[in-house]
Each structure stands twice: as structure tokens, then as C-alpha cells.
Length: 286
Image 1 (tube, rainbow, N blue to C red):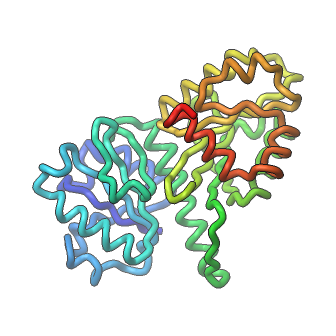
Image 2: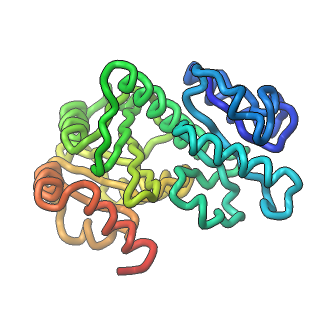
């Protein structure tokens, strides 16, 4: 698979882009810089059918950057042609309001953990959407679009519980993909959700009570992973109803559920509303 690379950096093999290029290569995706096809408005006539996704790296001090206008033209072309697009934004920069609905990751180009999570999920999701579109008619829906990915911890203790959680998320509209999220502890699953056109990334840690683990440690571990990868929310799932103190000590961006309670919450509330309310609590404190 090929993906477009929209950037003001002139050399795709530059040191600044090496993590982006390496992560894409590990996903068997070849990045094609738009400058090699026809920058700016000329891009639309040069995009090949094999280009099934696009990654745009927004420059620092965006509005003042001399290449900003060309970047925006190329981003607009991709959106107009319905090419799945991921924006990479430096954490110190403000995302223009017009681009807020576009899937984006706040990460520095040397932040390999965040880039691995967001680029990996995005490219696998783009491939799955492309394969699905080629095998059946396109179906438009207003339901939440979810891409779930599994880590290599699948083979360790808690296999059955992890499988049950993945199956539950899948039944709520998730596209499952067997792929490594990262090599750090603190995450078993990850999925990206578009909630009211706002991209939201969720990482999940699954912990059986039958195992020897400290609830506080699990929350701290998951919280650290959220911070390191730039995810929006976390889910800590256990096999038994968690005690009240465990729920209360979790920060606003981590939800704690037993598998049974999560199943009931998804049945009565739905995944989109559940995460939308959690995100609102984080952003607005309500």
C-alpha cells in the first residue's frame, strides 16, 4: 500500500522524518512525498489509485511558514477526494479550527511512542477500510467508527479476559486487527473513535483480579501510557466489579469497569455516548 506524505520538509529520508518513515515501512506502507507528484493544486491530477491514505505533518508556527498555503491546498485535496488523512501536530502548536474534525495526533517527530500508536492505528485502519470498500458496496452510517488493535500481551495471563473485551468492543462496532500497539507495559488494546467528528484515541488495559497485580499500579501504568502516547482516554477492565475506591482514585481520563459492567454500559449507553461523556469530563470538567 502507498500513502501520501504531505510535508514542508524537502527530503523524505531526512533525520526528522525517520520515525514516520520507519513506522510506515513496518506497516508495509510506502510513503510518497507529494512534492514528487506535483505539489499544491497540481497534486489532484497526479494521485495514483494505490495511494489509499495520507499523512500531513503540519509545520511549527504554521500560519507564518512559507509552505503553509501549499500544505492546506494538499490537505484540502485529500479531504475532497475522501482519502483517509492523519495530521501530525506538534504539541506546542494550535490546530486551526477548520482542521479540528480531521483525525490528528499531537506528537513531536522524535516522539516514537506517540507516532507508533497513532500512525500504526491510522494506517491499519485505512487498509481495512480500503479492503472493505473493495469487497462490498460502501455503506454510509452515522454510527461510531472504531478501529481496535491488539498488543503482543495477548499470549500472556488474562488471554480469555482480553479476548472477551475485544469481542465486546467488536460487537459495539469495532474493526479488529491483530497488531502490536507498542513495546511498553500498560496497554493491551487500542482503538480510535470519531465522536461527533472529533477524533478520539483510547487505550485499554485488561487486568484479571485472579492475577497478582496492584490496582493502583495498573492505573498509574495506564495513565503513564496515555501521557507518553498522547491518547485521549484510557479504559481499565477487570473480571470482577471494581471496588468504589478503585473507581474514585482513577483520574478523569481513565474509566474503570468490570467486563460485566462494561457490557451493561455499552448495552444501555452505547460506546459513543460513554466515551463522549468521559471526554467532556476531561475537557470541561463536567
